[in-house]
Length: 475
Image 1 (cartoon, rainbow, N blue to C red):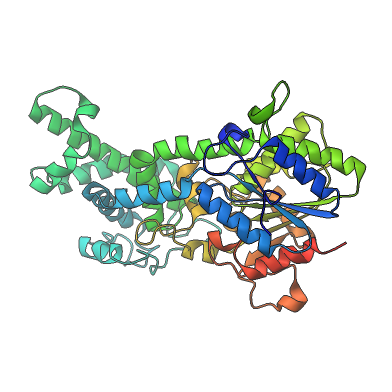
Image 2: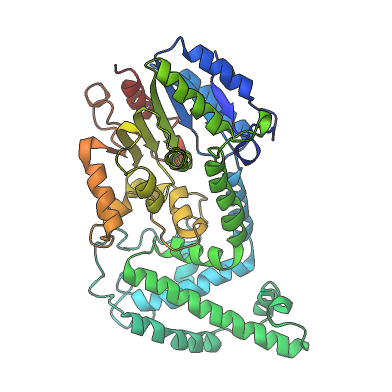
């Protein structure tokens, strides 16, 4: 039966302070510890943290019923980021300016990698307006074109040097000035949406319009070169997602990345802050729980497993960081990550060091083909949530995330020390399990099976749950 023994609601700034309908108190955790004195095993599941409180509680109820072999406790923390991002992207996609920016950039960029797209011979002028519009009407624009998403090196037919890429800027600016007719009423309307007054200040109308058009052309040229550069160095996410990422970063989602996403990451860290000189509801809920568990493990052999889904893996990384800072230690039997959204630098710094806090590690995530098929917002952003975090919310193009197979698979493209470290780690003890491994027999292959083909399914997918339960039930 689902009760307060099955969840801990993380409140404001990682404390017990109530922020919604549900809340937890230090006394709730005290009651949980008393109950655990009668138990042998505990599994703590940190859910994604990108959803609303009510959605987090529904996950907690579901997992309480699904986990078998250890007493389940779900860390419920929320930012509402996922729906915020999806709503914002949908709103942006409705604007004429966004659609025109996409069209202009794709047209100019495609000229410079026509062979990569099988658009014709070298020197082709790239995609026509009609071809672009036809593609943009599709659910997954441009995915049918032969883009080498998993290439291990620069294409022999697309080997522009950095200097050549830099020299493209003037050329593209000149082409855009010639191509875009700002006397066209439709384009004049676009300029109004480009925040003319903010860009060039109080000047007469004609001067201001001219200044805005020049600024727009310069921005378009820079964005186009950034897209071309990403294709040249292999950090692109496909033609359409890459163009969308660059536009969203430049104009539309800076506040979401800096405020909501960074705020979510702060919450993942704050729940483990020190409780010295704090009392009552002002204490940090995660730290209160872990301190009590450390004391309990000194009294009895309580086996503890941790599961982190998506941003929940970030929270676990920060738990380890806090333990090291306070020179504390907790004994974790299995550490399980599900499609983790943690960056490589955080994972390497907090999960890889020896001695660590866990006996066994396993990561379940999608292969890159499924990651590319898992559209965050169909027709608009046609890659997965992890791709979106990597390409937009982290504020840097193609930010490596531990849950994305592309960084493990593309050994020639991603060959710096960080990637070789993680590959070596994942290669040991069957630590990496990729979806969809459903063709394997669940009877003989547990716990090495997951059938999840979307980012949000991992804590729903029965094969993944069966794999985790298999580990929970071991002595």
